[in-house]
Length: 383
Image 1: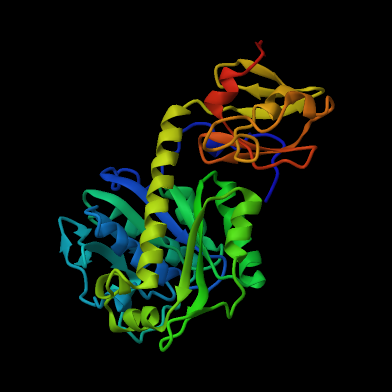
Image 2 (image 1 turned 60 degrees about the vertical axis):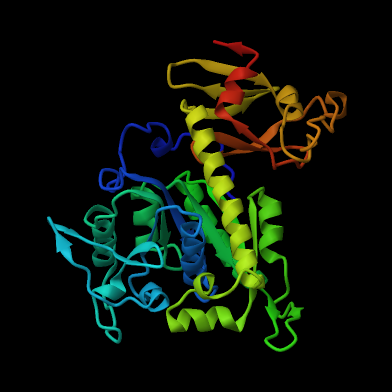
């Protein structure tokens, strides 16, 4: 994960400027969520479709944008190939299983290859954001193509994203590539809502026992290492792939006793919690620093109104609120200020979404996130 010497990214400093190009058309969408993976073949679209269904089953109004221009699979998984209608100059999304959806696959024949250069692909994505009548939605999931190319950058820089869900498989090679996608979201200060480990163990169709054929826990270890929420693992079950091929998502056709259904429902609940948390923190921390740096013995925070906060490094390290420093149940602090070296100092800063900063300390601790409001509250002096 990159370490920033300060928080001087202009895109993170002026929330009222440079509004996303899809903001006006998506004004009635409460939460826009990107579903991403660093590489193909990890089941990202399957996760996107079934998560969307899981949210819709709770009564939420849900949309799904298939942004994989070159390999759209959402129409197949939702058994919907009817070309979209146009009304008042805007395309009307199709609706199936309680989900509104739009895809490049609705605009071409099933066997027609899409041979487009990057600018044409990004223009289509902009069209999906600005010229599709999404209407009122609680959640709009965007199924990104794998990798970190033009389409991904267009969406991360231009869409009003609440955050991103990262899908990986347990193998180290998949996890390592996944980190590239995480860094992409870091560059534009979009919060990582959580990591999902797909194909997390194989469920035998005969004995129904689970076997870890691709190892297990790669996604969870990555989440723990970088202090991202781990949303859960989805076992590899042949019925999940078959449901996608038949055009009826497993979350629609399987009963509540299915291990896969239970896993996806649990992930959806954790994801909703993270979405609500990020929304709350973003509202509570509306003032974003223009810079965070360090001087001898202090962390320095510059604010937009021209004010500088100075916080003793030792004090700030002691006041970390992460689970390693504070008991989550009792609220009792696990560390003593006397245990912290007097020469403690930050090694780097990383902005988390639009609400806080993660600090890497010289004692090896790097999981604490300090909200911007928290930094203002504990400042010793302000110049």
